[in-house]
Image (cartoon, rainbow over all chains, first blue to last red; front, side, top):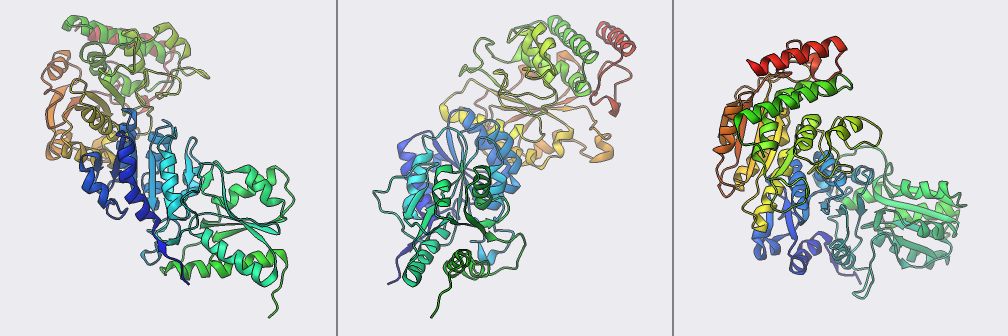
Length: 317
Length: 278
């Protein structure tokens, strides 16, 4: 039976009301994308705690930096591409350089924007944001994690960027699940190989791991790398010990999760086969996300194929 | 705090003398330092409520150097009110690990409200601070943002200008140092910015136009600011001369930044003193 899916951006938008209730320092800022970020409840309950700059992302981020300077905790809502690129320098200079306690939320991460096309995709945001000193980069994989992640941002010192897919996801975690920034979650254990991934790809990896197990008996660990930076080095060592590591993300293969993992493997001299899966370094025309994920081999079938190829396992039948 | 015009004029001359002294030792953004020196002297030594012993005092006025390259003139004024020793400033300026350099850096200098250098950032941050002050119920403090006129080419300035007016941030005071010159040439040649005040007026701002080298006018402008609880933000459009007071620097793009020779220093000091006496 098909599991029920929900939208992480909706979970985040709704949960902002709870966050605002927990701490009066919480305010919300957006450049005309509150509704797109599903902040309707917040708009209803806390209209005096939101600032809308209109379609002006640079001002949104600079303004948020000013609010931080006065002790507030602004959550800035935009699209991943606009906050990381249009307001890139404000993110770096006004937020990161100041080590400001702002949380930048970018929806439409990766190619999840699908038919909106490359202008609204964001396959570069991790590369950009991770390059800023002080900046923590997060990517939630399901609604439960997103909510716990958001709760964890409240007492975190320093700036955070959260990239949020608009492709719905099944719930991977239970409500009792314990979340910690910087520490991976492992929704499926395994010893014959590991898929290190984030965001919507975690559910595809889980499905791929299940099929691989059913068809070959090989057990594949699925590691949810929700914290892209700072990357959990121990989790990479552990994954490498399986001998086969596939790092996958809805992001350009350059500058994303895969290269963070690659750096650890190379620096520590870990003995493992390794492959980076993601968006190849090129622009493609508009299409639905599922079509794109299949094309880039990061959907369930693609991840399965890439993993088995690396392991040299052939499926007969 | 200085209250008399004569004191302020004297203080401004001292700032200029210090700037030239530094410029004979190190490369500084002397052109834009000199153009804004009179305004900055009045701002720091007359207008602003600021306790050098407590740079995080809630009741302070906030200062943002959006034209971050005018770091030297800012630091010298801060030294003048006792934030740190002027000798230390001269010693540390543009040294490895020093607190003072070509732009302002909060990592090492607690008297820097926010680090700046890249243009077009300050007004948005200032608006955020102004909104934060209102949210906290602080009706006493103002936020002063000093920008250049070349900086007005940055689109983000106008995003912030629109926004500050819309949110009725009357506690926000922008000062535009209109020295007419960018690094590559005049504003007239490069952008045709034209009437800055008219543009801010169209965005709903309260506009004051002054000669930024006449201390009487500068002081009057500060005295006539509406209260921080006012609705419209205020911009002071200060008409100035880049490299003001030094004949070979005035209106000369080559003196956006630089270091003077011993001969140039001698001439500059003579001219700046003569101009102050005139």
